[in-house]
Length: 160
Image 1 (spheres, rainbow, N blue to C red):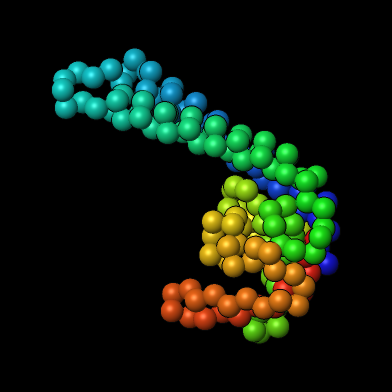
Image 2 (cartoon, rainbow, N blue to C red):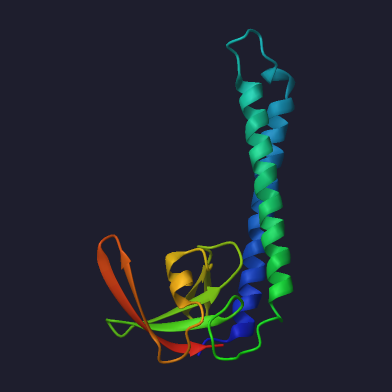
């Protein structure tokens, strides 16, 4: 079973890194947008305008990453194992080839990969097909998904 505390530590570290990267990108875009060299010389010179739009998008990304981090901080201690899959739990699935797959069911930042105890843990949300299919399941339940025309079957082996 994956150490849940280490999963949370890795998640917080990853989200903090994502915030730092997004802040740096927003600063670069803002600096480009406000640089004297990028003042439009004619109506076709749109570099400054494009950089301003990029800066606005990067700032929105910073806010989204910060929001994800706040949501996870609030969620971290809310899951008290009743044995059912819900946001805040770490789920281990056994696939058809007898490989274990680990997931943190979360509230944002879907797709973030964490490395814990030499195992990969993927953050998924209830909005994702697998997350939606797992909600409410417990150990020994099975779940089947069809992705890209292929059926994938899993068995829930741990929920913590």
